[in-house]
Image (cartoon, rainbow, N blue to C red; front, top):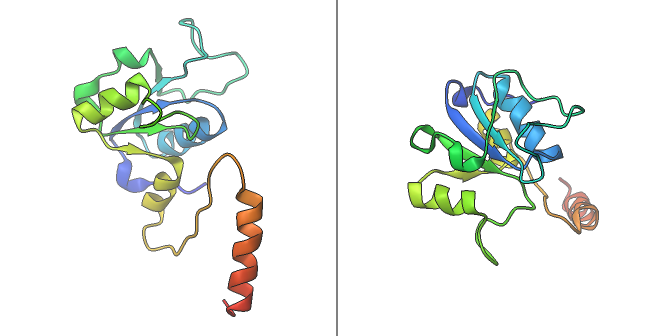
Length: 141
């Protein structure tokens, strides 16, 4: 796992705690980031028993996060940032000037000098990867 040492000691909210959000939580917890977690599908009693939440993380409604202290917010890919209408937490982050980042940016912060090609999204990743691989192979890269 690539750990973003440059984010150590920061306070970050994570919205959406599926595979992507939990991967971000583990990476950030590994470098001492103070985490605030929320998933719209979780009840107020906390995370489902099968979810391994980092011990230093706080689970809270996004409305209750310490917005004045947040250095960044991670939003899972399936949650709208802008269109058709932003999630309430995304709108709040924009109003407060809090950077909204993804797990991809966490990886980039962990290895800023790395040469990466990142393919994300709901559909078409395998096709895009195959096409890109073909193009790079034909280019001799």
